[in-house]
Image 1: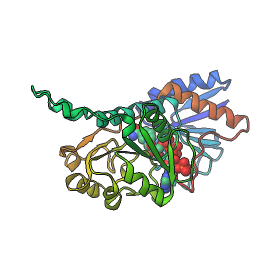
Image 2: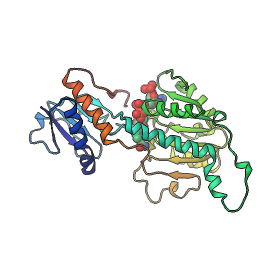
Image 3: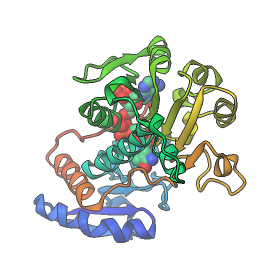
Image 4: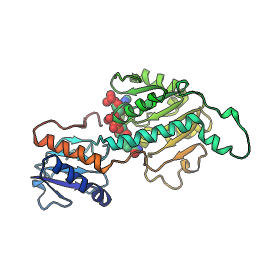
Amino acid sequence: MQKILFSVSESEFRAFAGPIETACRAAGLDPTISKQPQDPTSIDYIVFSPDGPIADFSPFTGLKAALSLWAGVERIVGNETLKAPLARMVDPGLTEGMVEYVTGHVLRYHLGLDAILATQRGRWAPELAPPLARNRTVGILGLGALGAACGLALASLGFSVAGWSRRPKEIDGIECFSGDAGLNEILRRSDILVSLLPATPQTESILGAEEFALLPEGACLINPGRGTLIDDDALLAALDGGPLAHATLDVFRTEPLPADHPFWEHPKVTVTPHIAAATRPETAGEVIAENIRRSEAGLSLLHLVDRLAGY
Ligand code: NAP
């Protein structure tokens, strides 16, 4: 029997407990799921979200793993009371959602849909015909589970795709860069820039005034990564007097985005409320069950977080 404690919000418990239990049983496991343990020392696994109650893992002395419901782990990765391995969420359903969000907004910018919708007032405007995707470069910062999937989807539509990661990579269909020089190169050529980096000390404000200044005139930004990637004041300055034509932002330094934040009213900003890609209970349940199965079989976990690197 595997004792699984859920440290998640009420709504996450309602959405995920059933599918995770079903997936565990299908994987040949015998799970007991609870929200409040009688005896913390008996807990084998903790399904974790930052919206749940547990901040101190030290009473869970028999913990075999913490399994994050979220892809982004910045709110648990530095928790020194957690000694057991930490796996982040890589969920096919979440990835599909992110591919759809990013592709949708890239196509919106590429086709100039905002301008087309704004001119539906009896004006025949042939100058709005867009170039082909192959004449447009999309730069993707972060070539992990999400960035790589988005890049491949955009490449399959014909876009010229360049991507940037911490370590050098080779991905068919994506021109890959790494390092400081690689970042500058990507910025210089990105007509549309997508940021899908994790929040770590190294990525804090990675997009600031100097970086925005390198973008081509009229570039657009899509940020479904994390709010901390962006220097908000530098972004506003780049929209007001710099090269940036528009930004679509899904994640923010403070969420919900405060009512008086200038992003809400800015004519060149689209705000979406952290909806780019949710973890999907059915597909994520299988991922969590597979990790518990692997742990019980003595195999290493999938999607282990590198606690030093911070993601
Ligand atoms: P991942 O698989 O861990 O990939 C992260 C990528 O970022 C990797 O390519 C990594 O490089 C790169 N990277 C990390 N630090 C870097 C640095 N200092 N310099 C350059 N590249 C760096 O993560 P993922 O699953 O793709 O998710 C990415 C992020 O998306 C999450 O951390 C989360 O913040 C965000 N997210 C948002 C939503 C939403 O709804 N808005 C949903 C899910 C996730 P290497 O390949 O060299 O390791």
